[in-house]
Image (cartoon, rainbow, N blue to C red; front, side):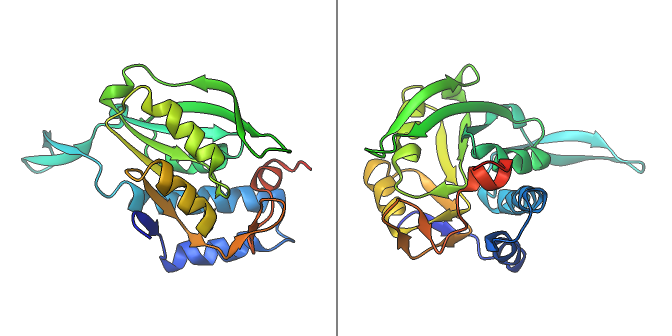
Length: 209
């Protein structure tokens, strides 16, 4: 499906299966999401730019490769994006962080923005947008619409789960944005939830209903 990347590593799939189970506690769900996000970061950031620096080992001088974390931005779609954000920051603690506040209108299912805060000089930075679910795609499309106003160097989108409808919406609106996910589920139900899915990610992360 074009620029869709499914991270099928056995550890990712194992943790995802555990997360899907309805009896998993809030604490357990949150911890699993952090762990799976850390694992996915390795694939998402596989092509992150690096440069060489001179270093001294205990034995001699040599060169090594490092990333410039200050040029990388994790943009979290509130509120559920915070779960993936925490895991990604464990891997790249020097990354900058932006937040996009969106909620889905219950009648129209259109994304409505209520907050937007990004690091400065976004045109010099690579942005990774994080949100656990790519369902209708409305929130993801709206978030990337706003980000593109600032012309970042690149944009990737990371989610835990998606479905054909969400992928189609993203690819129609932003065919240049690569999508990274742990699973492509069957479809959306009548209420706009991914099935089989894992329920409402935000409620399961924060223990709300």
